[in-house]
Image (cartoon, rainbow, N blue to C red; front, side):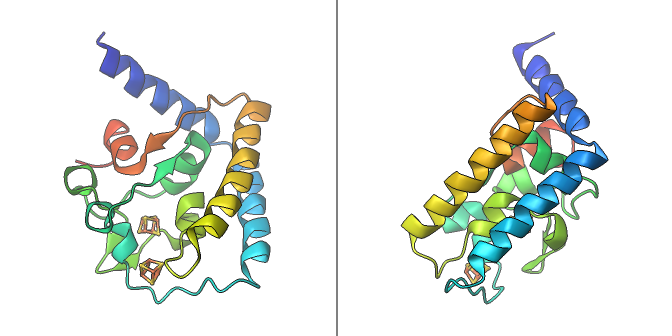
Length: 155
Ligand code: SF4
Ligand code: SF4
């Protein structure tokens, strides 16, 4: 077995291990705590969808197995994500995974200052990492379109 196949199998095993109902509920609670912190901030989104086109926007979205397990409960609409570095859950500028979107999706607002967004992300990501450790799910940190490709969810 090649190193790539071993890495892909390790990611698939971690996402399978993360797909427990209990962890989905804990992730939802973490996202809810984030929403409470975001509510007083100037973090409005016009929903243009530009930031989900990672290549054009010039940024990347990294995800962990527990986030991925939640996101891939339903397959993406497009199979072109990895090829064009665009989220395959986006259809006509619309997020088709809004209720399951990842921590990075929830923290990124083009109107929010980088430093403020970074602080929010780091704090909630630390909680997410601790959740992996408590649950015995391997912590991996993988670019979204690459991860979906490695899981066979994208081209
Ligand atoms: S955060 Fe900004 S770039 Fe992203 S969808 Fe909302 S308005 Fe568009
Ligand atoms: S899951 Fe939704 S919000 Fe997140 S990158 Fe994909 S389309 Fe954008």
